[in-house]
Amino acid sequence: MAVISLFSGSGAPGVTVSSLGLALAWQRHVMLVDADASGSSSILAGYLQGQTVHDRGLLDLAVANRVGNLGSAIATVSMTLPGSTVEFVPGVRSHQQAASVAPLWEPLSGVLRAMEQRGVDVVVDAGRIGLENSPLPVVRSSDLALLVVRSDLPAVAGARGWAQSLQEQLAAVGTAQQLGILLVGPGRPYSSREIRSVLGLPVVAEIPWDPEAAQVYYSGATPKKSFASSPLNRGLRTAVSATQGLIANNRQRLGTQQTTEGANP
Image 1 (cartoon, rainbow, N blue to C red):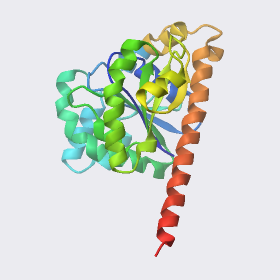
Image 2: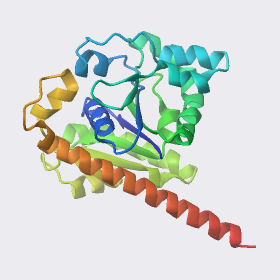
Image 3: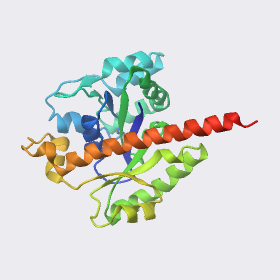
């Protein structure tokens, strides 16, 4: 079980669509957390078209954290996304509320990692990581942190600085292998190999460019009969396998390293 965070360096490359799509395609019990500091409420207003009333979320967790009740409170603020088993924790409703939850990010990181004891994986929509009060502590503590990037030049240019900065931060604590790229629209115009060369990070998974299917996740558009087998959903299922496989390999490598170090006098 693991915590996976998705985020962007700039623009809107599809972090929410990718996060929601991965959670719905997940093969185990999963919780989706909206930690976007912009307060866009993309899932409630978009995917659920504002038709689902839910008055709990991160602000309630911030209050619970102040009174020392964060660990038990997280189970009370989530809702189940219709037609799925995905637990969803809504985020702030506006960027003005983001400062109120900023002190939450560090302790929440520990609580999310402890969800493993409940047999629950966690997918975090961290939004644009460069925003003030963004959930950087959650990203840094994730088992896998995915920088979502489109394959065009403006997107790559905007991601380059964050790719280098986060790589340095994680390398300093020995977890650089937990950082990678989720590439949206490979070949438009750059390939995974070209993106990896420029950003210096491995491309963990690719999501095909499929605007029609993406609208189902982004704005709650009515899915067509071919939606389940669309390029986007095939890509999401492949991405789930890739992320789970990488996390398992990283954990095995870490366990082997610790065992070897423990054996040395």
